[in-house]
Image 1 (cartoon, helix red, strand yellow):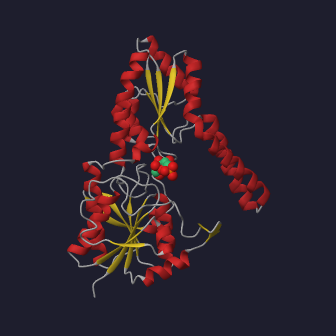
Image 2 (spheres, rainbow, N blue to C red):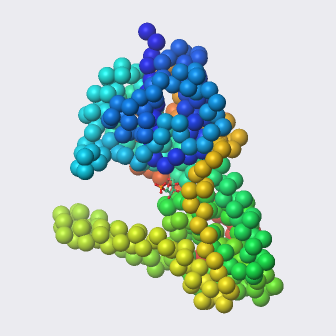
Image 3 (spheres, rainbow, N blue to C red):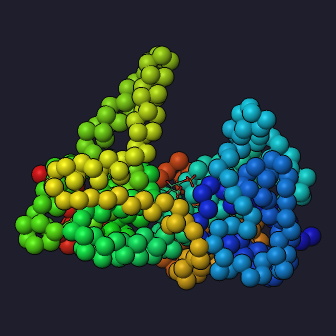
Length: 378
Ligand code: F6P
């Protein structure tokens, strides 16, 4: 009998999701004669059993469209808000999987989705995942779809900011998405010729940044572009986070619930304070350098619109490879990009691991060689 497969998109949307859905669907339906059922709004649609038939017609004309035709959400199967109460809905998901007579479920998502998918796999479901996120931080894949498009958008924004920064002799601090991984800020910062690039992986010294900017003024360049990741932090803040994380782990080990709670709420408060980091940084740099300074937050513009050709190609080849793997009876894997190949990697190895920027990564070394200030202490 022909197989039936389910598909959903979870977590933040990303350009290329529709290309991936189409890649899975066209290959699964067209070559292997499978029936494809889409679930609306991530894992929530699987709980509510809100489905859509992804036949040839439904998959037509979606390749170039941004966002996801299925809708998405950040809902987690084991911690879902239902009627004002947080509940574990994994058993309902298992029921609906079987009620739809699925042979496999394909989950398209980033790091959080990989973890959720692993939990469902442990419940006995045949799960495959595809790596999407503009952050490019999914482990064990060369890259994720969505990253290339966002890289292009952020680079174009930096290009545009250059002319206005130059005309007004200002510092422009441009915030680029990426809470825990700085790939997007690093890539677009290099491609856009930013003068300073600040990443979550390399805590910065404010003085070092100010000095780099005043050094440019001395050499006749009285404007600067500072590309800063959402999650970048200064050395003091990074040390405090490290201290609290260790305190939490020690309290956990000692079974001291009160101390753990205290450290956790302090950590949360610190993260909440990160919300206006870019604005604060712009103010501080203005005070330290005497140059007028403006913050620009690119925000969700980076996630919207038409996927680039590179993302369409990547999403299509991973999606099509996923259909072949399902046909071969493979599950419990993420379909990773490895060079020109699409390779299955065990979900256990992906889930819970984040691909952050190594401080000695070739891109980091390139930035250093270009004379870019990474905020490293003087
Ligand atoms: O995970 C992708 C991402 O775009 C991050 O770069 C960003 O920090 C986050 O999502 C924003 O999430 P939301 O759309 O839920 O505000």
